[in-house]
Image 1: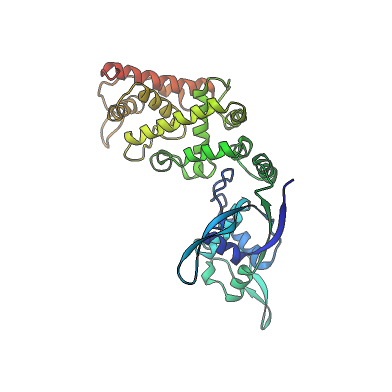
Image 2: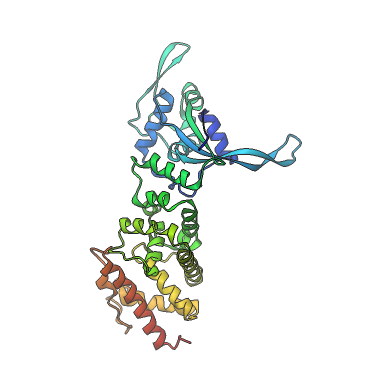
Length: 374
C-alpha cells in the first residue's frame, strides 16, 4: 500500500527547494513546462496573494544522497528527501518564474485587498513584476501555504505512480501524447524522453515551440518506431493511433528496445549530416521519414557527406529553391512524387506510407546513380 503524507509547503520554501535541487520537475511521465498562458499565470498569482483556494500539489518522495555545503565550506553527502513533482508542475514553475521577475502580470489582473497598519488596503498588482509589488503583497505570496501530498517512493510501484498520474490529470487538458506517457509506463516514458533530448531534436530539428510544449516531438519519435515496427497494424498516424501503439510497449519489450536503438543510431548519423537547423526535412511531418531514410543509409554504409548531398538533391526535387527575382531552378534533378503525399490528410496511412516509400525510393535511386552502394 502506498504511504502518503500530507503537509503544507510555503511558497518561499518551494522556491528554495526548487533552487537547491531537492524539488525536481524531471520525472519521466511529467509534461513539459510552459503550458500556461499569461491569463492563467496572472490568476494563479492573484489567488496566492488574495488567499483564494489552490489545488494541492503531489510529489514522489525519494531518499537520496544529496551534496550539502557545511559552514566550514566542506561539501558532504547527506541523506535527504528529494521530491519529484507528479502534479502541480505548472503551478510551481509559474510561481518560481514570477518570483524571479520573469513575467509581468496581465493588465486585467484584479486588485488584492490585504490587512495593513491602516486597516484593509487595496493593492494594485496588474502590470507588475514581483519586485514591483508592495512589500505587503510580496509577503502574502511568499508565506502562502500550498497543500502538498508526498507519496513515499519506497511503497509505490511504477504502475501505482503511472496510474496515479493518469487519474490526477484525467480531467485536465492533457494532450493525447501526454496521457500516453503515463499509460506506457515510467520505464518507456524515460527512454522516449531520452530520445526527445537528443541533440538532433533539441538543436537541429524544426519543431515549433507549440509542438515542444504539447510534446509533438515525442509523438514524431513514436511514429517513427511505429512505422518501422511491422507488428502493429495502424490505420493512420494520428496522435490517437500513436497513443494506442504505446500500449503495446509493455508486452513487446525486446522488439521495442531494438527500435529505440535503431532510432538512436539514425539520430547520431543525422548529427553528422546536418550542421545547422534543417527547416524542411526535420519538420514534424517529415521527421519520421527522414530518420527511416537515414537508418537505411547507415545500413548501406553511405557516408554522412554523401547523404548530405542527397538531402540537397531531394529537397530540390521536392520543393525546388527559388532565388529572389529568379524563376524556379531548372537544374536536372532525379524526380520524386513525394509532394503527392503531403498536404491535406497527411495523417492518413496511405499518405504517411507514401512519404516514407517515396523518400526511400528517391534515396536508393540516387545512391545507385552515384555509385554509393557497397
